[in-house]
Length: 60
Image (cartoon, rainbow, N blue to C red):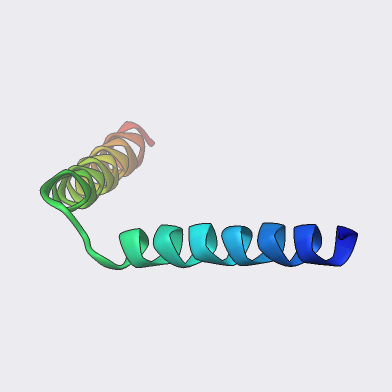
């Protein structure tokens, strides 16, 4: 009886795992927008760093 219950739990867990992995394969619009925002913030940070470096060089 316990073996059947363990098998049922294992099958259910495998099914849930498969559904979770299938859902992660597609990238939706929110994920795409998030990636674009990350790129923009990184680019802005790089530009601010470059401007700060120029200011430090000019101050010497």
